[in-house]
Each structure stands twice: as structure tokens, then as C-alpha cells.
Length: 461
Image (cartoon, rainbow, N blue to C red):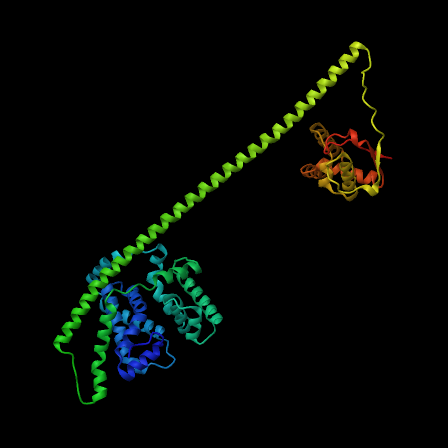
């Protein structure tokens, strides 16, 4: 019976213990080899020694499968056993010559991101500093990429509780690194660990370790079954396993180096892509600014053209009037068709004031009265025309008032703030009209009004 992919780790171990099912061990090795191999590699700093540690860990698992407690979290158990086995290997391989050889082999595997370069040597020590439950949560979530729901189910808590536990554990890791001079944000630490903590194990290593683990427990299993027989591996079996391990180790070293080179290439491509994106964004911003400047220039020219046309029409009218006046002075006669007398002033009562717009002179009068009555500065400003000379005279008068005030400095500041407003003089006129003329009626001749924004009406006293 082949191993079911949906079986839990403990179910697979139980089946191995009861039936000596080799496929159950193979499935467990497939699931957790990346975690064990990567943890070992970070500590022993050698692919060959990391493979040795991994083989030792899974052999211990096969031997002690029947002794594991029912509530054991296999991921956490494997991680702890890996750390102890790695420490033993490092102590055994303490000679200078071997350390130099390991450092030489690892130079080809250190093409990682800058943050990972600083975090990697301290990661397993930092993980060991966590309590058992926090360590298990981090391993499940960021080493084996389990979902929050799966982490909560494994720990026997809710998804929300698992998320809070992970947040606290990651913060403790960040503080651990900060105390040792490695500064990294919480989110950045999570990304670095998730991306680099577990590597792809060398090709063929899974099969070799499965064979070795099963072979390592064959003596014990057979002794328990027969109670009187002792079976040892033959010289041929040892030779075959040794050959398989040597081939797997050689292939693993090559695969690890290829993986390191591929990661460096991806990092370089991401950096180039980021630089190209920044250049493209700057080009777009420059183009948008250029277009905005052109639009402003077009609008300015358009407004200047409109004003020029109006001025030309005004000059033509004045020249015609001047010619007519000269002709009358010369001939001393009245014109054949004298202009008609202006119609009597039209009275617009207060109850006829409303926001009628500026399409006709009557509408402009009503709108201005409504703006005065309601204190609407925007509509009042649209209904009057203030020349530059008038604005300048207004500002000079304000300055004289400030100079004559008893508190000149305070009055000056107040008047400067008033003049900086969008409708300074218009607001002053509106305030004055509201104070002096509220309740009175307009009189004026709409026929003689200039364009709506240049009105010349009067107040009826």
C-alpha cells in the first residue's frame, strides 16, 4: 500500500512502525528534507556535512518512531534533532584544514541578498532562543510555508491566535538580530526567511537517505521480530549504499552551486527591472510636466487673444465716435438721426433678487442684489469689475489706514492678510454694501449696462 499524500506525519510514522512500510518513510523524507538540509547547511557550512546531518536525523527518526509522543509536532522535532546533530558535526570537524576546505566550497554558494548574508549565520541561534511553541509556529509558517489555518490546526489553536503568536515570535527574532547589529524590519525579516531559509535539496539525496534510514533500522526491526537472529549488512550492500551516497553528494554539490548561481541571476534581473521602472516613471513625470506647461501657455495665449479682440473693438468704437464728434464740430449741425434718449431707469425690487446668472443685464442686476443680500462673495465678485488702478488705490488706502492706526503693527498684519485673499477688495465692497444698503432697492438702466461682469448700476436711497 502506497503512502497517502493526505496522511499526517504521525500517521505515516505509525504505519511504518506497525508494518515497516518503506513508502511511509519516503513520504516523510520528501516532506521535510528541505527543512532539515537547509538548517544543517546553515550551521555546518558544507553541503557534504549537511547531507551527513540530514541522513543522521532521518535515521534517528526511523529508529525512534515508536517512541514519539502522540502530540509530537514532527517539524519541530526534526528541527531540534538537526541542530543537535549539526553541533556534534561542527565539534567533530574542528580542524583548521577542514574549516578552510569548507569555506572554499561555500564561497560559490554565498551569492545571496545582503540581508540574508547577515541573518543566515544567526538564524538558527535566534530560532533556538524562542520557546518551543513559537519555534514550531515559525517553522510551519515561514520554513514550510503552511497557511495560518494549517498552523493553527497543528498547534491546536485558532487561525487568529496562530497569527498573533507568529507576530510576537517574529518580533522576538527581529529584536534578537538587532542586539547583534543586524537591523531589519519585521516584514523584511519574514520575506528573507521565507525566501531563503529552506533550499531545494540536491537531486537524488531523498532516495539515498530513505535507503540509508531503512537500512540503518533493519537490524533493530528484524531482531524485534525474530528475537534470535542477527542480520548485518553485507559488504556488497555497504558498497552499494556508499556508492549511492557518493553519487548523491556529488550531484547535490553541483545542484546547490547551480541554485546559488540562479539566485544571483534572479537578484540581478530584479535590480535591473527596478532601475528600468524608475527611469520610465521619471520620463513619464517629465512628459506630464511638459504637457502641463504647454497647456498653461496655450490658455494664456488664448486669453490674451480674446482680450486683444475686445480692445480692438473698443478702439474701433472710440474712433467712430471721435470721427462723428469731429464732423459735428466742423459742420455745426445736429446728426440726422440723433440717438434715442435712454429709457427710464428700471427699478428692481428686493423681492425680485435671485441668482439669475449673467446672461442679460436684468439677470446680472438680480444676481448682484441676491449676492449682497446673502453675502455670497463668489457671485458678487463675478458681478463687478475692478480695474488695476482701483485695486492699487485700494491697497494704498489700506496701507495708509495701517500707518494711522494706534496699533500700527497689528493693523498692518491684519490688512496684509486681508489683501492676500482671493477677493480682497470685492469682500470689502460687499461688506460695505451690506452694512449701508441692506433693505434698499436697485435702480438702473439695464440697456446701458456693459458686459455682465462690468456693471454700473446704482442704489436707490
